[in-house]
Amino acid sequence: MAGNKKVLVIDDSIIIRLEVRRILETYGVQVLELDNVEDFFRFSGKYRDLNLILLDVSLPGMDGLTALEKMRADRSWAYLPVVMLTARSDRTTVERALQTGAVNYIRKPFTREILLERVEKVLGPLVPPDGDKDVHPMDLDTQLGLEVQRAKRGGTPLSLLEIKVPKEMRHLSRLPEVVALRDKVRQQVREIDSVYITRDRNLVLVLPLTPAQGAQVVMKKIAPCLMVAEDQVMEMVAVTFPDDGAEAKDLLKALQVKGKKG
Image 1 (cartoon, one colour):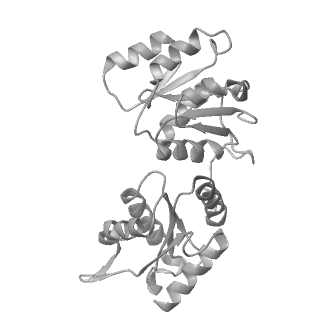
Image 2 (cartoon, one colour):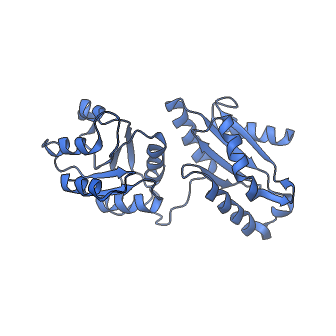
Image 3 (cartoon, helix red, strand yellow):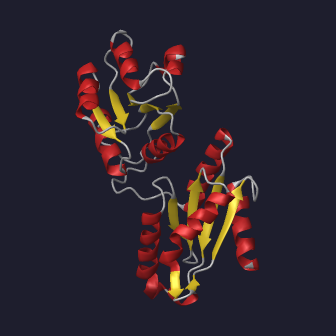
C-alpha cells in the first residue's frame, strides 16, 4: 500500500513535477519537489524519510548522474531507491544510470501508466485512499481547488475554459457523444491539462500554468474538434487566475457569468 509513502521529484521542469504530483497524489503518495539537486544535499536533513527519488538526468548545476554517484558514496543515501528521469534516448546514459545504482529509469515524456508501473516496483501496489482499485478522476471542484493552491504557492497562472455543448447534445441519451467529444479534446491538450463533463453536460478544461493568452491558443487548437456546422464552432468561454478570481469558487462563478454574457 502507498499509505504514508514519500517521494521526492528533482526536475527543473515545473510541468514534469506537476504531472508527477498529480498522478501520485491520487494514490495518497506524498510528493515533494526540487528544481535542483544542490538543495537536496544542502538541506538533506529534511529528506531522511524518503521512500523514493525521481531524479532528472539533465539539471542546471550538478547533473543527475553526478548527483546519483554522490548519493551512492554516502552511507545515508547509499540504498535509497532512485529512478532516473531522462529525455535522452541514448543507451549510454541509461546504462551509466543503472551501473551507478539507479533502480530504473523513465523516458520523458512519460505516460501515467509508465510512471505508475516504475513507482509501484519500488513502493508496491498503489491504491487510492478510498481503497478503490479502479482510479476515478477527481471531480472538478476538488481538482480546481488543488490547482488554485498550487498556483498560489508558485505564483503561476491558471486558466479555465468552458465549452458550451449544443443543447440537443445534452440529453442523457446523447451522453456517449459528449464523452467522445471530451476524449477528442483530451488528445489535443497537454498531459497536465484536465477535461471534465459538468452537470449541465458542458466541458470544462483546467489548464495549469496557462495565462489568458495561452487559453486563447488552446481555443484555436481545439476548435477543429468542436465544429457543429461548416463555419460554426461550439461557444467557448475562458477565465484566468488570479485576474478573474482568487479562489476556485470565484473562478467557477466568473465562468458562469461570462457564459451568460456570451
